Image 1 (cartoon, rainbow, N blue to C red):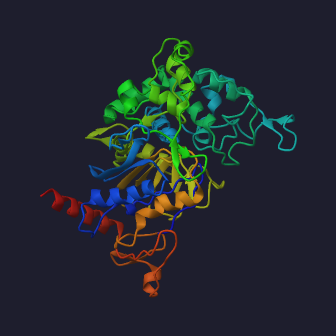
Image 2 (tube, rainbow, N blue to C red):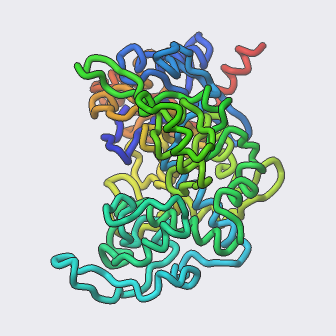
Image 3 (cartoon, helix red, strand yellow):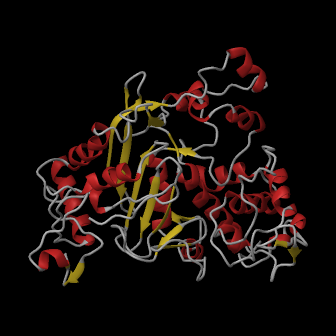
Length: 467
């Protein structure tokens, strides 16, 4: 199976690899075995994988541990920081306001945030020289990383723990380039959209998200501020040991004294597991109840699946329409224009969109990745969603190839790949047609079944196992 080369913002996940078709083992056991390989090879300490259709979870499995110190087994309901996957939630929330006629995605940002009026563009050769932009930045551009806004990590910006104050700084800074001319992955744009949600709704961004998406979908484990109980289910993030031969859990709180924690947190209680994984900055976020619309959510595989299933159902959930079909289409349609995102993807509204089938998801699939290797995809063509959750900080390129390549072992006979060609109702690999068996980091991979066939066989297999 061919995979996309990975980097910090580009995570590969083959849908087909999470589905059992012909093995006599239960689907969960086979998936868990594949996940376990990554643990055994010290690529991840723990991982959770899930595949679902629009109505139900077809399979979910967990492998490894969530905490190396306690050796607590990874559970299907373990909590993960999903980081930039939050962008998709923010964009979906924004489109609810579009449905209500309060805003249009082609509107200029300055229409709702006056602090963006008269924003200038810095000259690429001399940043001190400024000139007016060809047009004011639009909402579509901030939601598709093409606005040219100052980068969220720019040293000139001050951390305020307030969307209002953060976004005011973005508006006061010069644009890095002309709007709409370059894709530049940037949290500033998404948080600008989150601030517009606050202005138009009159509610804090997190409250709007809770009432309009998380509560209606029953996403009880999705939050910006995990509770003590949720903290105990938190999957710890791992990194290389000093000798690069193993993995160790990170611990940013080991040198923090209880008195200092109480002082910095202004008396607000933050679960120790959250501090250990994400550092002292969480004290301020809890105290100010700050919600980062570009990367602050924590969630579980089942909760993320609900969000993805809702989108697969074109905005309808359990018979109730929460988002219009047109808004869902806009989320998953390329909005980045002709500017290059990467060779295989464009960018929609808070979503990466497949333009080429470089991995098992179909062209037109949309979803997002997170900083510590989480990912979800919605595949409308095959009517499937997939979620993979892992917490790893410094995974190498070779390890990334293996963790995702391990899902395409030769014993799984009927998996599709990106080189497949249609043959009636089946998919036949051109390598198999020519009598050759493709090899590589994923191993040999014969291909004989379409995704529709895979889905139907998986359902039958699961039904048979339950009898």
